[in-house]
Amino acid sequence: MTPELFDLIHGRVRERLTKMHVVQEPISSGERLAMTLRYLCSGNAIVDIAKGFRVGLETAREAIHLTLQVLWDDLAPQYMKPPNDQMWRSIADGFWKRWQFPNCLGSVDGKHVQIVAPANSGSLYYNYKGTFSIVLMAVVDSGYLFRLVDVGAPGRISDGGVFKRSPIGRKLHAGLLQLPSHSQLPGSNKTLPFAFIGDEAFQLREDFMRPFPGSREDPAERIFNYRLSRARRCVENAFGILRARFRIFRGPINLSPENAKRCEGSVRVAQFFVHGVQWTLFI
Image (cartoon, rainbow, N blue to C red; front, top):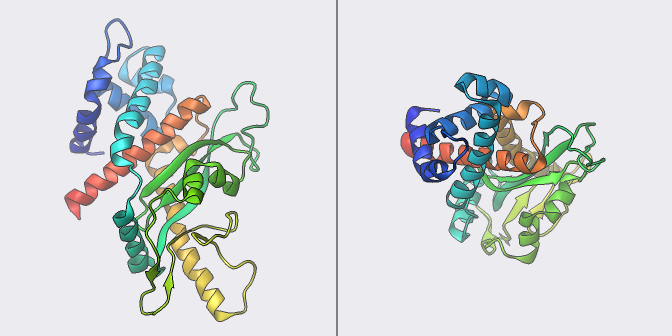
């Protein structure tokens, strides 16, 4: 992260971080933000972060937890707003121009984020991989940018189940996502609805497409599956970029599920913020 981007983020959270009194002689808001970003990007334990900044372990832990909360509470409403009709159409246009998949509103998938087993949680967070996790459910556009996210579902639930129970899925089923109306396909007279795309774990609906099952002999169906798979990889690529930039996701997060949710949410905001600023400055 460049100094300019750090200053931009710091300027938006400085006031609330300054108000939060952590110890008798509180560290500055800039140090708290730097400490938190180091924690997210390096993947180091909080005890190592504390040593690097020459503060006590509890001081570092409290500063990081509170800063994660501020990043999510203050920046999410501004930088993670749900798309409106015009933005959805722009997202669909991006999928057509970049991946030749029309009327696509986003690629959907879930990622298991490994956590240390919470006390007295039983098998609630135990997933099919044999680890404990919470699920990040995301809708990603053609440029690998997170547009909608839901964090915190227990790892034992399938991706389809997480999506159905998430605020994203419930709003989609209730028609509350401000989706655009039907649109004519490029180079065709056919008019079809806009839809999200995902893998076989998700339910097939008019507003959600998935591949044809099994090995298909029909050339048209094979081409459809190929195009859908290529566009769907956007969400997988976005998760890969996220893991490369924020190394905290490379191992178990030693936080409570609630703090892990704030951690993941703050990372989404930070990535959205950085992506948007870099696009504005350099493209």
